Image (cartoon, rainbow, N blue to C red; front, side, top):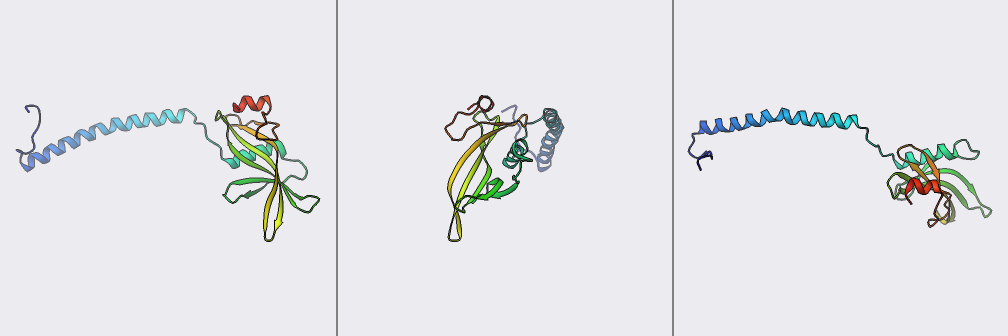
Length: 174
């Protein structure tokens, strides 16, 4: 025990001096830690981070690329029962007087995580008492929005099991 310091035998003043000495040593190391943190923050600032876009931004990008300016198209936001936003493009009625909505719905990230995916759906509703229930949903197309470039790629898919265009496959890895 020659190299260990024993505080038991020290007076109260010596114990306080030992604590202050140790505290001062910790304070002397703090600026070095701050310098390392500052250098790390500067490095992070110099390297642009890939900002993830929100589902609403994905749907807006598709709207601007594919539907903006088309006659009869609107741009209204609606939410489902779970609080997920959908972009309502058109509302009409069918031959039977049922409500029909054309809307973009956010789906998910692509398999390779390089794209955000959305679906163009046509949903037919039937009025049952006070409530409106979906009775038919058709997929009209699926879209990929490339995160790095913002490019919108139509897949041509009209079913979940469809393969999609070569450009869609290359961008999404699916």
